[in-house]
Length: 476
Image 1 (cartoon, rainbow, N blue to C red):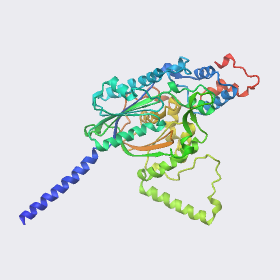
Image 2: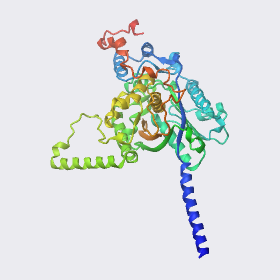
Image 3: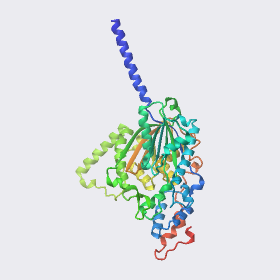
Image 4: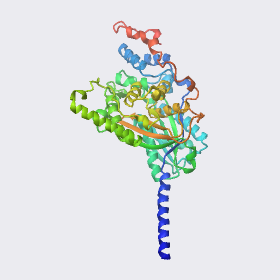
């Protein structure tokens, strides 16, 4: 009996040990954000109303029709006067970009942002185990990732990923790569560098669907430190709870709505099709179908299902009530209360229409969409890095508290919709980061009005006659 008892005790101890080891190993697979640093270009790269007029006037391919279109686009864009453009635009060379222009723009970003985030956290470049770089519209040899490794003299065995062509949703793809590596390797430190190179991609033609990109996209970038090291968990800011990636590349309409191509004169530009909102809506709906059960409480899901069931019964009884009679392109409401599982909404600053559409679909308040709206106004659409400027706004406004959940939503060419949820793992209400890109101006936001002065300065164009129009000196 004593022998049997001993064997049973050993077996029980072994079982407890295996269970403890399994639970313990899963903790090493969690993905945390240790810190992040958004890039603020120098003030000599700031795009004012006056300078915007100078850029447009330099383009000899534009006429009165294009002027009126651009005026309407930029007035309704939600972009202010303090966004940033690449240096070659200020030098008047946007029609003659060189490879070095794009590389220099990226060097200015990563030397600033990566340098600051590493120094602030007292981390040596040689401590980085994983490096993921995403810049969609610049491919160089050696890669941008290799240039970062060379500049910071990182280790020979650093795991490197260099992403191009992934669009505005690329930063979440980069995070997803890191998350998956963390599942296999424990005790690692990762660095994600996300940006976009505008220098070689400034469109100088007159295709409306391409010149629109010049109105929306601006310079920016972000460096993000992620880890699954136990020793660094107490210093972490956010923990990744879940991520969902949706790709509609198999659908021709979605694939072609947002694409880099050449116009009839052979000028390369970024085409934004009229069917882009429809493609974005489809991808967004499909993404929500997957991530919603992962982030909302069961009670809210049951309430929504019951409400949906009652609605279907009523439609069967009276089919005429099933018609919405909404205009084409009107965003539909999800019909579910996302605030039961989410405190903050980090929306991609793809444009005013994107922010308003998501806000309407998720039934968000002005308070909820304020961070995205203010980021668009202050920094413009900085492509894949825009989410982190929105997050930085929330932090600078001292909104983020321990236990809060942040829902990130991004869209990208392909067509893609990626989303994820971060949990705030410690209070970030005491001016957490001295390097926050909003610190210098956060007290001025939100302003009483975000109406830009373009209409006031260039509104006279709307009354001009194409047959008699001449560009006066006042346009400059």
